Amino acid sequence: MWKVKSLSFLSRNINSHENHHLMLKCWKRKLSSTTPRFNQSHPTPRRKYDLSVAPDSASSFTLPSLVFLLIPVTAFGLGTWQVKRRKWKLELIENLAKRFNAPPQNLPYDLSELNEMEYSSVRVKGRFDHSQELYMGPRSLLVGGDAAGQGGMFSQSSGSQTGYLVITPFHLADRDLTILVNRGWVPAKMKNPEQRKHGQVEGEVELVGLVRLNETRPTFTPKNSANTLLYRDLEQMAEMVGAAPVYLEATESSSVPGGPIGGQTRISLRNEHMSYIITW
Image (cartoon, rainbow, N blue to C red; front, side):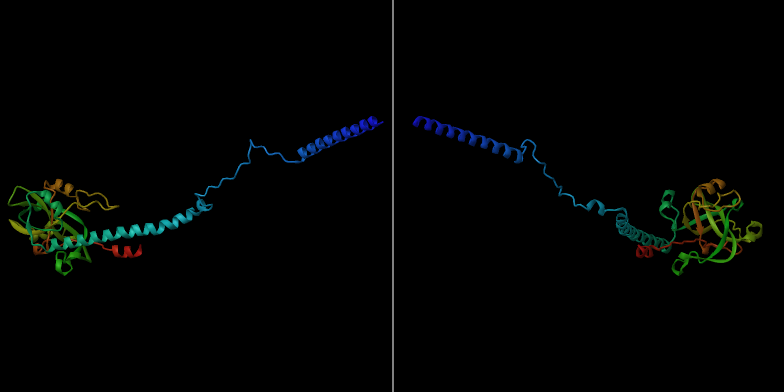
């Protein structure tokens, strides 16, 4: 009897143990199905931020802002350039005044020196060759063209008469050389030398003239012709009469009664750089 009870007790214990084991398995399966799994081989990527560039920096330099930035920079550059130009112009005017006030000097034997002597007074002696006169014009009469200390440096046109400049070959007495001398202005009715015979000086004379260099042909101005010159082309003029490309403009003191009126040098130097500086 006791054995039968013992066997039944063991049987119940074994069954309860098996049931407990089965229950643990069920709970493990349930937990495995509800617990999230983490895949360590593929970690979640992290967002990366580039802190070297501000978010709106690319859009801050737009075309309008760049244009507004260039305006003051350009104005400053132009103003600085005008300051330098004004200094250069003032020095040029000062040098011209010194040349006008300097006493006349002899024509240098080295003619290349004339390139640095424009508006300088030069004294020469020789004879005119009236048979090869050239005429430049039409031109207006200038008054006081060589009076450097009385406004003659910036001579003004009388505006009342129109005529021509008489340019005559001049054979130098101290060397075998012929140059060109602008004797001065004559009215149109006196262009023909037959109308001014008393002004055609004969024999050896001494005169003072201002050195002038070649003139670039002005815009829209026709080229010079054989009969009338419109601008000062020294090479062309010298070739016409067989002279050297040396050109002097006679001063007013070289005028003779009945002849061309000397002192027809016009100097017009505009100096508006200060207004440009203020503008910029």
